[in-house]
Length: 138
Image (tube, rainbow, N blue to C red; front, side):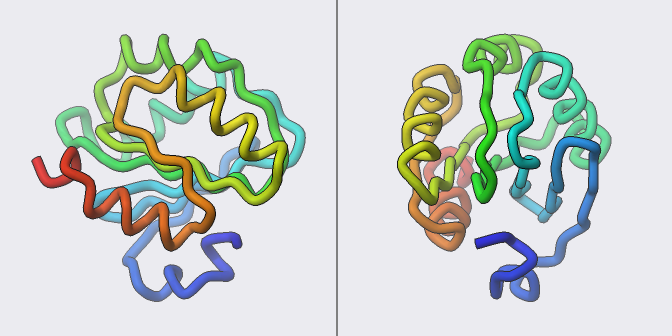
């Protein structure tokens, strides 16, 4: 379920940022990313996401990152290794999958993410996990 179609739209204060490759919902302690259908996430896209997050949150705040995979797209898993080395922004990540392809890509991404990661079957589960994880409490 897309963030805008969920009850979370009214539960959390947020700012919507539309980029050429997807939508991002900036909340106080987490961001929900909904990337476009059939894009390929490479280093250039990750760098644009990182710059947008720094612009929104600064460099000292740790946030939760929720990848809400409502569309099918591919990710170069090694970009997460580079991201983790260059940027220290994300303390928890949740990957929401809705079909077998989403589950498989989420499982692969999880292996490369340096932060605490959970695979989730719903956006609500992802938000609750990100907000209540031990990492986000520190």
